[in-house]
Length: 290
Image (cartoon, rainbow, N blue to C red; front, side, top):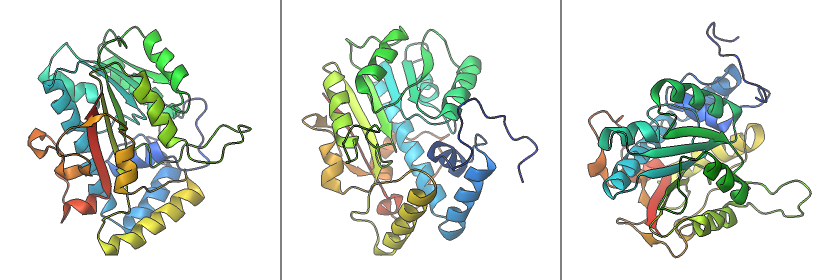
């Protein structure tokens, strides 16, 4: 049974399977999701209600990253795998600190995320500084060309690339390519190479390394459920997640749990994530400079 206000899906939306972007939107309290997404998410939340504060903690990490980098002088952001507009997008956070200055290009492959981002930006954005494009992160050169074509971002100048809660979703090779491994590490290297000097890379990633022992069963269940019904996931350890930054210089405090990354950048309007300990956030995160 669907809600009375169920949104009409844009062309290309697969409603036969729950989608990670729409599931995440539901965790965050958003409404850009369908019954199939809610049924999947409710099953998880019933078994593991801590998933919702984990999602909040990750979203608040995004907010703090944007504030920190704006204070460091960054005025251009490319948010890859930006998802649906829930609990404050990057441009909204940046606008509080540098009104009229920050430019943001959102990128997603999920049609719902793109359609709703366009709707939000049409009401609460500036078309000269904010846009969204539909692109596949598995084609870095094409995606980067699409960003350039918007005319919003000057790719010869420093840019902050955001890969927030993206890389633990497996990035499979294109059909017929002959490759079998997850493309995540080589894709991130390609984006690092594309960035101008002085740019930043920010990411967060689910891990099973260093989490409370009681959470390992939960992670195993989540992996099994997502692999069977939505998009396959991959968990990496601290060393592997740190490796995504290559030879970039990590900002203090390095790769750490999402609640521990510059907590002083929180604002009064941020959602509080009620987690008993930082490692119960299950996501490691960091930011590094080229």
